[in-house]
Amino acid sequence: MLLENKVCVVTGGTRGIGLACVRAFLAEGAKVALWGSRRETVDAALATLRAEAGDAPVMGMAPDLTDAAAVASTLDEVVAEWGRLDVMVNNAGISQSTPLLDYTPEEFQKAMDLNVTAVFNGCQAAARIMVPQGGGSIVNTSSMVSLYGQRSGVGYPTSKFAVNGLTKSLARELAPAGVRVNAVAPGVTATDMVAALPDEVVARISQGIAMGRPGTPEEVADVFCFLASDRASYVTGTVVSVDGGALF
Ligand code: NAD
View 1 (cartoon, rainbow, N blue to C red):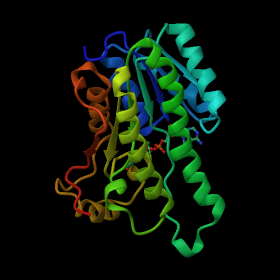
View 2: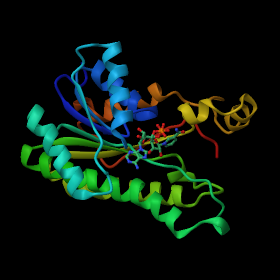
View 3: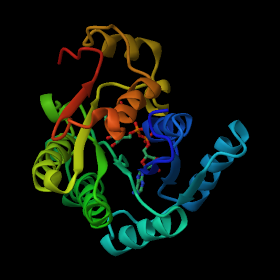
């Protein structure tokens, strides 16, 4: 198995791409701490996973990701329970679609806080454990908009360009310590948000995708699995597109 006995943390692990990563990591033999924004959604995700596989080595927490001290102390709880930290997935994120002239400073700041500062907090707190431990793998969730931009909601692509900058820079800084840092850039992925769209909207979006359809969270999670694992031992500082050949 790709991740046998690896201790992994997945932020935004209660649904969508994050929950698919949790499932894939568990299937590959990992122990997983899933983090969500609220205790209730964390408990609901844990209940679902335990219904699927009763003895799954999984736990859940809900720290404020924008609070560096809270992120660090919650990672310490994981290490206290399982002894180490092998994989940190900084996945939680929010998207925005507001046109520029309607943007509020608060809305722009919200994207920066969760999509950038929280990723920085996760990388720093993980590195403080992984560097003395002798290695680890950090995987950040970027987006195809970090390559193409988007027509509206400029805070979102701006934040994902920053995720790529964090990823590439920390890969260089942490490589001598054996810590790899990569990002996954999903295209349109059939999470709850996309599943709720009318068929004609999905069809229109799909015209901009070479493969003619949205991806599934499971297809995206498979790439996280690879980057998290030792099979990617010579891969660092990359942003891997998982977008079906987006043509935007
Ligand atoms: P989702 O909305 O289904 O899940 C988001 C996750 O983030 C949830 O687990 C939620 O609990 C968590 N989250 C949201 N706000 C939070 C907060 N303030 N504090 C802590 N956790 C919070 O989203 P998704 O589509 O699975 O997206 C996951 C990641 O993938 C995001 O970074 C998103 O930008 C990125 N992404 C998604 C798509 C897509 O099409 N779905 C495409 C490209 C990139």
